[in-house]
Amino acid sequence: NVFTTSGQIQSLKIDPADDSIIWATSSSFGATHLLQSTDGGANWNSFSNLPDLPTFTFELVRTTYDLWFLGTDLGILASNNSGSTWVNVNGNNLFPNTPVYHLTYNIANDMMYAFTHGRSAYTSSILTGAPAASSIPVDSSATDGSLPADSNTPSGSATLTPDSSSRVSATFA
Image 1 (cartoon, rainbow, N blue to C red):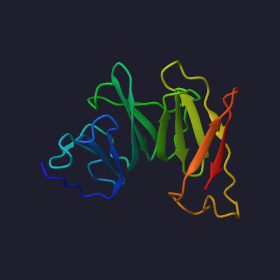
Image 2: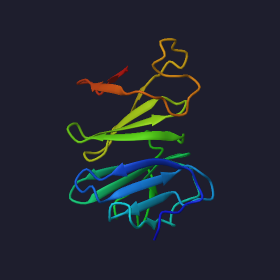
Image 3: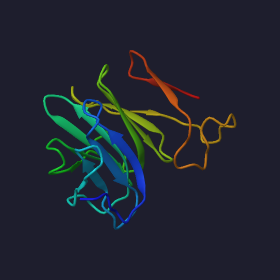
């Protein structure tokens, strides 16, 4: 299967353990929202069991089984069976129903970082039982150029530093 989608490709994720495995997400309505290649991009398989929601990011958490996470227009979807089924992990004080443009998992502290559009950033423990997520307020009126107030996808990078009370400070560069 050649890589085809009627939507805009929003992100690519290369498996850190096997660079022949690649995931692509699409942020367009009416398109295939998740594609996967297991041969370095020569062939692609689509996942048709997802809701028709723009999908912005994919994150993989390797444990005794793989956990897949998607950042979508209405929050986060998760799968523990290689994308066969998906559950919405929003609510229950974990994550709000808001567009999630980037997900990053830190295995050292078992924290998922979710970066949203207009609702700040959130953290939550994934493997050890999730407490209520802590919000990282972002000042959208910042004038130092580090986080454009009107951009869907800020450029540059952020350094996140968790402390012992589960608070995270962000330094944008």
